[in-house]
Length: 443
Image (cartoon, rainbow, N blue to C red):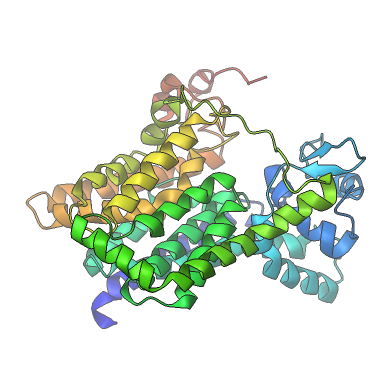
């Protein structure tokens, strides 16, 4: 596809920067020991060694021994909860373990071949798991590129791909802090857009299988990602006539709906089975709390880690929602974005732990790539072309600089405020007085 070479180069450049960042801002630099399966990431990952190495998913008595060697849990093994039946249950869902399983296998074989411990946590496992999100995201960016090219020019798609990842906090959660959910889910959303668009062009049971399986995998990674359903559900319902054609297409392929529902259930079933085995019930309350009637707007505009403040390119991702007229994905993107944002800002623990900008919004970026591309297309065909490119270049530079600041703790992961942020803005060498502006540690 010669005419679309710029967007292909953009994917390759983005992938290269992500790989470089993985080495530059992590324990991989200098080939030193690395621990990517720690803190929350341990909770998502522990299903694999529990089942495949230790054969103990109920009590997970092996955790203390592993933690004493590698110091992964943060000191309290908060990843599991004691149950009345004597077992211990993890509050994290198993979706990431399903996605990490092929890389776990590679790590296990490499550990055996290299003489490292085959305990699920030695360096070959850490390498394999730490690189897994990069693989998924690179593949998903190729799919996202293909889907975007159906609606936008090659140059617009190229700029979208680069800015979507490198001018946002996505780079941090795909490349560095990448064994949490966000990078994996980013890939699932990009794939969902691709297969949804393909099914609506040429209905196929295989596409339906992928659509349902992706919804199931996303939901079993983070339950709130069940909102992904609105993408295929509302696609091509932007106008009355298009909506009639869409539901006529669905009625003509009802077996595909059954296939999608079955695939979604199969993807989620391992979690139900885990709960049944460990807790004795098919459903287990992991204890999340929401403030739906009093959402935390500071997630978007707060000085601590506000989405629009620390990653201002996201303002334009959202502004693109006003440039989607007559697009078949208009309603699905709009409904998903509104619901997803509301759910995220309503979570009681609005800090979302230590993070750069608002990390819980990262997975939805592929969906926002559509309105963002629409905004860029309009800008690039108007007199605002060069100012738009200049602004995009500036915001890209700012974000890459801030990623460096964040990984050097100049931008603190949990103690920022407006005064501290502006004091270190584009400052390569902040003073002790600047650092003293940070909020006191949370207790």
